[in-house]
Length: 158
Image (tube, rainbow, N blue to C red; front, side, top):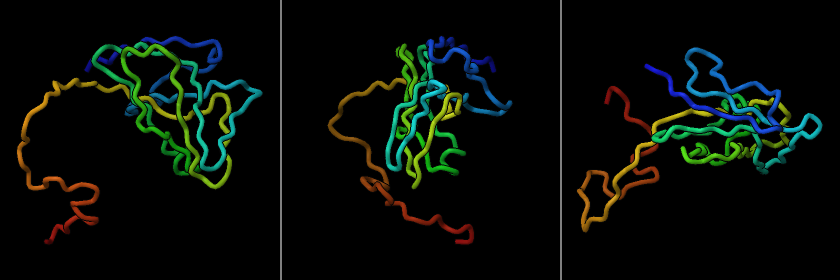
């Protein structure tokens, strides 16, 4: 499969930070790195949130999107995650990518320059032809939602 080509530029506050790369052969996303000044870490209080600058601007091809997703290690070790996960970067957006982090942990969380704060995954963005009708087809589930299929899966022996 031919890789998707996605050009990017660095803003002045990201100069000197590594370019986004896939860290392993099987990685689905590239890490997004905090582009904060060395002398100005960002402290996120418990139950607080902040937009972390990356200093990166992407030119995502038409028909694709960028999804900003949490890093599992931050979530596991610090209860820090992406508030609007996944955050969507549209193909026509040409502004700085910022990561909206939230701290669900009991202690303040400090973001420093060069810290990997999220990952960015590029995916196709299918556009639907949305139209109004008088009635929709019926299904067995119907209007059931929010747990309507139960809490536990059925056992294989059932």
